[in-house]
Image (cartoon, rainbow, N blue to C red; front, top):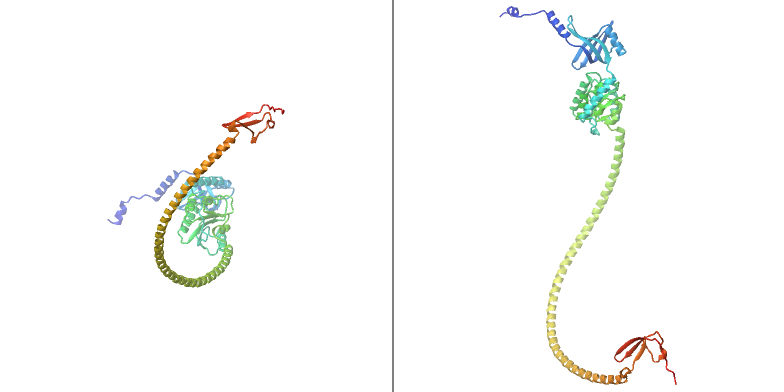
Length: 452
């Protein structure tokens, strides 16, 4: 089939008809308030033409005609300018067929208020708290980082402040710079990419995210929820240094460490060169002192080793002498033991002989002693019998002279014998002794016989 025949079978319609369909389709798209960043603003007569951004991949032109421009500038308190973050009232989309351009017809604009931004900040913080990313224990920063990753605008004052303070404080630390916009709708995504890039860079031990400060709206990028989540979960610790504002953005809630301004972040991230030099000097002094102590100790140890070697040699001599003396003593002990055994056998034989003689002599002595004892017992029995007879005779004579035996009684007061009645007193207690016993009596009265 020829090309002419093929074209004859295709049904075509005018482009104007397609454009008309596009316009009718766009007419059904509702308007309303949208949040966007002004990338560019151009004023022509009573009109204002702007380029709006809604993120990395969203760009669209907008128009404020006549009264709409005046109303928007009145609401804003000034002209529409690049860099502003606005709430824009879109009436409808417009497709300009002569140039094939899509734009938005707008009738009003307002700043995104700080109150709204602060409310969003609180909501973000609450969500991150529920995930455990706010208020968690912070990881310690490396004491001596090999390389410091830096995320900030290029060029910017924050860059020069951070680099200058790092060079002054600890020039040994290398710096890996990853530039990123820090304001606008594109900033959160760019900051996230920079942090992820530095996490993959070998040798980067800490990442600094810095900006020189601004209003709540200027710092809105650092309130981004996904950026804060990436910073909190970053394998390499992130330090926030967004300065010159009392309204700290949300990234301050999740960073491992913070600094009030970019110039002070070096005091958080790296040690001070002067302090390290002073510590090294002190360490060198201590090392020298310890070296002297070690050398003196080594000298003392060497001297002690020499003395020990000399003493060991003397000890060896003594040990050999003792060993020889021990051997001689063993010989003497064996000789003495043998001689003593021989002497003991002789003594034992003599003792046995003496024992036998003694046993015989003892038997004769015992028999003689038994005979003597028998004679002495018989003699003693005769003497005892004679003594008993004499004692009986003496007792009979004594009884013959005993007053009690003849019927008299003996009166005693205590141990005293009362010989006369005049010696007694009424009330005294007296003992009366008879020949067959005694009696206790009380003296009631005393009667003395008269002398004739």
